[in-house]
Length: 420
Ligand SMILES: Nc1nc2c(ncn2[C@@H]2O[C@H](COP(=O)(O)OP(=O)(O)OP(=O)(O)O)[C@@H](O)[C@H]2O)c(=O)[nH]1
Ligand SMILES: [Mg+2]
Image (tube, rainbow, N blue to C red):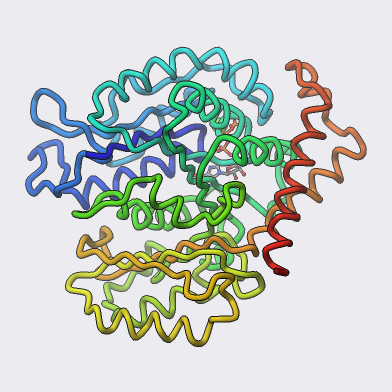
């Protein structure tokens, strides 16, 4: 058994985290009334069995406000979350990374680590941790990265992967967002082994959402939840990968571990068509820029590594190979290492879909997202705007300079690979 423990942190982390649990509970037939009727072999990756024979998520839910309770209650599977694993205070971070990382969040840390220790103790052979969070606020970004650094201290040999939401083009109502994002990425470079990046602006673009910003999360979160379910199917099928193996396959270099995900098909929940797609269509269409959930066009960079995850019953090997050969032939100039395109095929279908495909890309084009974030950061930092909020929490100016330099190094590293 190779178990994975999820930590969902902050407003976005908890909402997307609950979508993930809804999807995979249904895929594994975990149901409170009937226990699990038809357990999949690897139900234990993400669920632990409790004494009455029921299964509950290996999840710890953290926030700095009690909004977490309503976020969890809105989910169809809220009843499965262990009440002791919901940890929050009522102070809030005020959108400030330093409050999430050094003050308010730090106060909760002993409690969080104790809860994680209990979860680790009931695992037979822990594969690693995954953190769900956003990078723009104070909690998911500050506390999420604090938890990762504590996990690295306590379980240095375990891999940590994250599902991280950015908001590239937002005219934010929180002016501190660029600081929060750069300080988070600095930590993510050092303490996470693999980060699956989603960009809200890209998803808004794909879905052409023009509604009230508070409503569009209802459309976006199911899409991110589907992509996460597809990616994690690698760890849950009958011959599962460990986090270590999956991330190592995707990362030719240790620091460039930021992956974008293409999802095909994508339907806004109201417009879903229950249509089946053949293997070659799944593989070829998943390469389309309109399927990219981080808004970066992989064809404008070099693909360092790619993983195609197909979920369809009775996949035909011959059709898969033909489609992969077609990609290798016509997109060879996009690949940095020729043919570095892996695939994984499973019968285990995505909830509500006859067939689905996620293409995970480690592409140098993700550098554009970071360049954009760094320039928004520089614009504020040059003027020393809003720094007093962080200084009040004891943060030193050196920390911004170090974080920005680390991000600049990462961008340069992507540029080197792109031009090699
Ligand atoms: N995709 C998606 N993005 C969200 C959601 N909720 C918030 N965000 C975005 O995530 C960023 C940070 O918001 P939150 O996650 O609510 O912030 P937090 O981590 O709780 O931090 P604080 O509330 O500042 O303590 C903002 O840019 C939001 O627009 C959500 O449900 N889905
Ligand atoms: Mg919040």
